[in-house]
Amino acid sequence: MAFGTDKNVRPVSAKVVISGGFGVGKTTFVSAVSEIAPLRTEAKMTSAASGVDDATFVRQKTSTTVAMDFGKITVDQGLVLYVFGTPGQDRFGFMWNDIAAGALGALILVDTRRLDECFNAIDYFEERGVPFVIGMNQFEGAPQHAIEDIREALDLPETVPIVRTDARDSATAMDTLVQLLTHILQSLSAKAAPQLERPAPVITQDMRSRAMSALASERATN
Ligand SMILES: Nc1nc2c(ncn2[C@@H]2O[C@H](COP(=O)(O)OP(=O)(O)OP(=O)(O)O)[C@@H](O)[C@H]2O)c(=O)[nH]1
Ligand SMILES: [Mg+2]
Image (tube, rainbow, N blue to C red; front, side, top):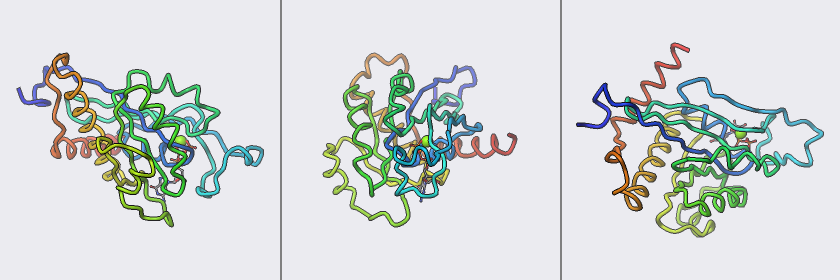
């Protein structure tokens, strides 16, 4: 049976997390890939919070996630992805365990002007053995570093993929998700292939295209 072509197959649902520091584009990313209107829990950043919410590098930012972002993507008729975004600020860190529970993997977004913002997220997923991919989000005016320099600065092994992304662009963001899924599947098959109930699905470019058309048609009807 080819994965995703049998109508009787119950879709596998999987959860992935979009994480990273404050204002790195997590909510933007979830909105770019979700085929449903994403659930966002944003609160206005007021002048009262100006000493706490450091928006020096994201000046156009007027709100911040206080609980989570939530979106859904039908990658294929056999695979539905639930995408959860974490809040970016330490004071909402108590949400992370609930958001990350049962997640197959995480995308950690970074703004190369503020690399240190992602250390908490890297530590969090490393400690829990959750596979993750680093997504370098493209902010205007941010220095263009070589991927290997970023790897060295973050002290990450070759096994952790580092990719360039743009959270504002659905197609680019979807490609990044596919890279995350591929990494998750590789990590799963390296660790626990014998315990999988079914063979791990292979994410192909064709599935990515189908996910993009599902996204477009869902948005057209919503
Ligand atoms: N130039 C550029 N701006 C981006 C990109 N992604 C997000 N932004 C902008 O950066 C700001 C922060 O984006 P958010 O998606 O709110 O970031 P966040 O990580 O969810 O923020 P918190 O939830 O507050 O931690 C917004 O004004 C976005 O429009 C990107 O890839 N490039
Ligand atoms: Mg957010």
